[in-house]
Image 1 (cartoon, one colour):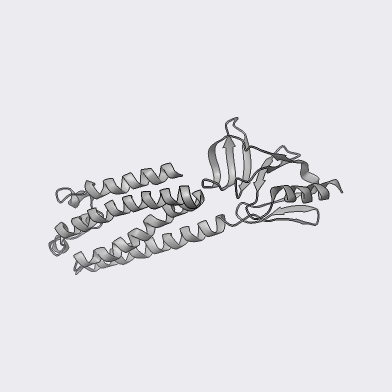
Image 2: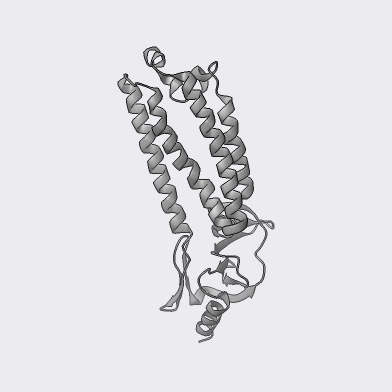
Length: 242
């Protein structure tokens, strides 16, 4: 995940120097759709100074804070920060940027409000997604069914389980088919280096991991961040043996 933060930091910093007064009419979002009258009322020179300072600060702060979170707090928090912080920053950027434009044209005003609403909606949606996906997947046994609830959870009837075992390593993952992944959290359907599809419900990198294999040879790898995987395994084995 730290590679993503580094790339984003360089991209944001680069954007700050990409737009100039010469190419703004073609590349600067919002400005390129303004009427000529609104462009005359737009302080492009000062706006581009604000634009550059904002993106340089965004890139630098994103990189520094991501590195601090990754190495000194929690690697997953670094990933969450890299996903949420730029959106929050752009909400501030859009709001503060309005002072450079009198926005006499109704279409321009509408575009500004629309952009702000969309950014806020995206920000709230991503925060909710991270909050939900980072919750632990609790394991319960009800009516001869192993219920793993939470994001990408699954119900496994005892009659469909071939084996439950402990493993010290996860398979080598090459791609995500449908899921959610950070440094320590992986949930959903993934493809391994042997072209095998496996379901991961990994809430932490605490070992050993629990591997459940169904009679159709589907594999579910599980780990909890709130409980001992060994204890959960012991509880599952006791029920399976009955």
